[in-house]
Image (cartoon, rainbow, N blue to C red; front, side):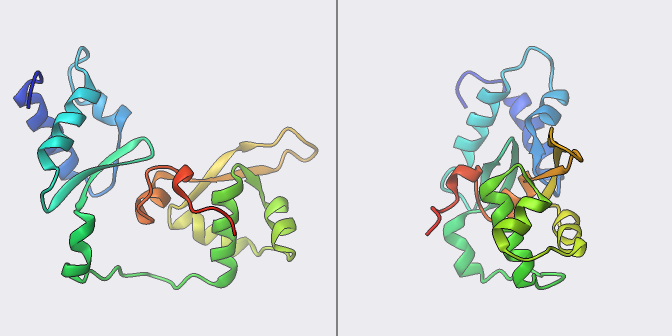
Length: 166
């Protein structure tokens, strides 16, 4: 693994493996000595898993082990969805992803219909959106944006990877 301390790579691997959710770079850095080059350790670990059945992936500012993308079809993995998303929820999530940070009123304007509070609540509970502060305008409305869980669920590294709007 090159110029990195194998024991620190082992520790990093254990921290990532033990977590059921992607782990932020900040949380990883807190588990390692102060003078460690986290990016070098992550690169070494990612290289070690390259071409294997499990790979280390970056989702936003977080890292996680995932099944290699080319094996998903062979494993025939089925993701259990607690609730099927309504058309309104899918449209709302897409608008937030493409226009973030965006207010509820802006989502309603783009969709052309009013938005039930339950739609935002559902997306928030799924961990796909989060508040991104308040807009500096009358009423100071809440702005919404996507999360690293959104990126992870849809297999994206960043929102820049979203397909173009047709």
